[in-house]
Amino acid sequence: MSTGGEKGSTGGGEKGSGGGSSVKTPADFLKSIRGCPVVVKLNSGVDYRGILACLDGYMNIAMEQTEEYVNGQLKNKYGDAFIRGNNVLYISTSKRTLAEGA
Image 1: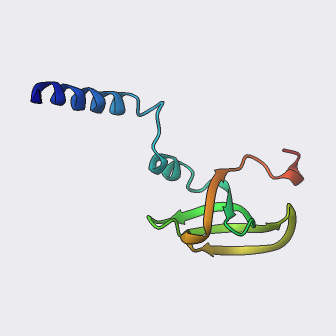
Image 2: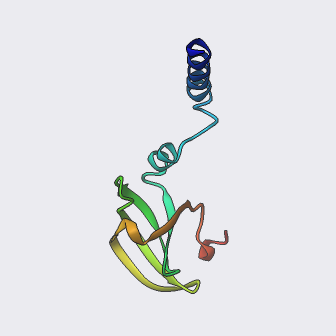
């Protein structure tokens, strides 16, 4: 029985490493979007759009060139913004803003 378990775990490991280019973990995704435009939606419904500078294991986020959107309307612009992770609902990549004609 232990041989079957070892094969299953080894096979899973091979699939995971072999499929690394096609299957990404959330950690891989977060590493890959550093320095890219993102949308961060908070539990309150407010969106922050800007360049992801860095983040940590608690989902604390540092952003640059940040814009704050409330109900879809631009409210403020910030040079740098720091968002505490417990307020984050999701992080999404952003190709263009609505103003640029997404």
